[in-house]
Length: 96
Image (cartoon, rainbow, N blue to C red):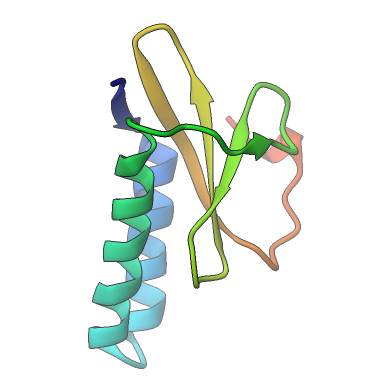
């Protein structure tokens, strides 16, 4: 079992999602970010997403939601790099 580490960018994405949804529905916002967090943390047991659009990453779709968790594997951990809305156009050069 690997440790899951959330990068600063992934944490910022998570907080942005929470704030955006909470403007309309705070309860839904909590449910969404809980589902994202649960899906990310489960990567410690089962990190088998598809190869990512960004070199060196993998992607896991959050079940029932339009969010993708992009992560990288190291010897010590699963590193959640970003949490992106599936409709968003994201380019490798925009990533850290």
